[in-house]
Image (cartoon, rainbow, N blue to C red; front, side):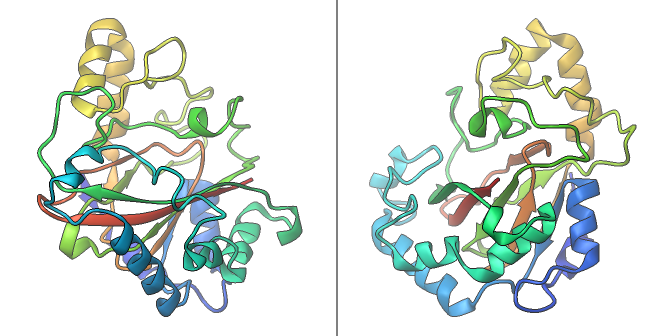
Length: 267
């Protein structure tokens, strides 16, 4: 795993206008991390709403929250006006439209939810998200496989409402390196949850299962995915734009810490 310091230089030009470099990175490499895209006061309001709703880090109640989601509390349209405003913020919509090369009016929201991830000891449960297996998100979002790479039809978004230096828990991604990159064959089926493989979110369990049942997939993942994954030192308010066909995973949050993110998808 490496720290891609180039990510930290990505700053939105103005009012949701992504730079050509950021757009090219998303289209060719599969992701771009953008800072200072959304208003600080709006993001702080969303974070306060989350802090008021979810259990504090280290509390007994937090022990049961080990998976994605907010139990509909922050699903759009949410009780939090800050989250609703973020979801349809003109700067965010403009950025997404530019990535897909379409007009804003053609965008369709398919996901918007804010959720916590607590720093804790790992478990041996298959669904545990403490240290995720590397994957692509399309099976969670669509009944069909994504189109060919040069025809993307969806933008996935993670808005970080915490700071890396306080809680860690970066999203690790595998940058695509050209059309013949061995990490990005088509179709994408070398992951638990598709192609007849059971859904296993826990990295250790997923890779152990593949080692026994699909050794060729296990070797592919170790050689081309985990060995090349990169993480970023996000800051409060950073926005990660990625794709349904981008290899990525969630990494552990520091013990005793609490990380909030707002996940969205537009097609």
